[in-house]
Image (tube, rainbow, N blue to C red; front, side, top):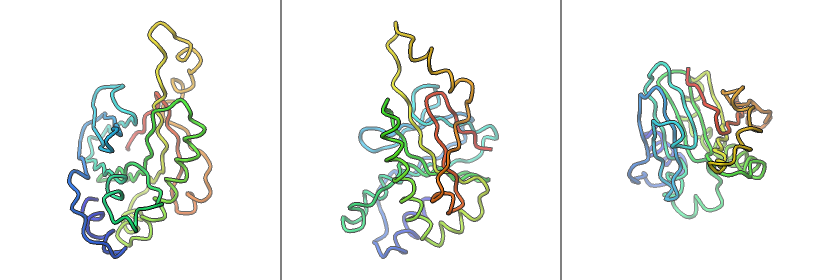
Amino acid sequence: MEDLLRNDYTAHYGLPVCNEPNLVIQTTETYFEIEDTVTREIALHTINGDGMARFSNPNASAITIANYDKFVTSLSNHFQNGRKRCDIIVCDDGRNLILGEIKDSPNIKQHRKKAKKQLYESLNTLMAVPQFLALANNKTIKRCCYFNKQTSSPALLTATAAFNRLSLIIQDGFQMSHPAIEGQNFEFWEYLDGHTLTLT
C-alpha cells in the first residue's frame, strides 16, 4: 500500500513521488483501535476505548493502515485543494480493503453526510489508479466505512448508555445503502461506539 500511494498514485496523477514520512502503520494485533489525532496523525491502540475505530483481527493477519488524509495533504496544492479525502485505508494480506472516515462527535447525522462525500470521492480518486483498481479486484470484502466514537456520558450519568443499547446488540456495524459506492463494487457501512469491524 505504501509503494502504491508514494509511487503509483503520484505517477498516475503526474505528481512528484511522495516523501512524506510515517504514512503507514502495520500490525498483526488481534484487536486494535485507530485514532485520528488532532495533528492528522493516526495512532494505533490495543486497549479497548482508547481509539475511535475498532477492529477485530481474529486470524492475526498482517494489516497495513495508511494515513490517506495525511498523504493527500502532502501533495501539491493544485492537486489537493478542494479534493475530499477520507482518513484511512486499511488493507490486509487476505480479503479485506477498507476506506475509513473517523469522527468523535455526537452530531452523527451531520458527519455521516460529510463522511459519505469524503469516502465516495476518495474511492473515485483511488479507483482511477490502475494499481489500486487491481488491488481492489483481488479483494472480496470491500467497504467504505464511517466510524464515529460517540461522546461518553459523564461518569454519574448513565442515560447515554441506557438508551444506546443497539450498539451492544448489533456489534458488527450497519450496512447502509449508497448506490454510488456500490457502483464501484464497495459497500457502505457505519460503525458507532461499541461496533467493531471484524477482518475475516
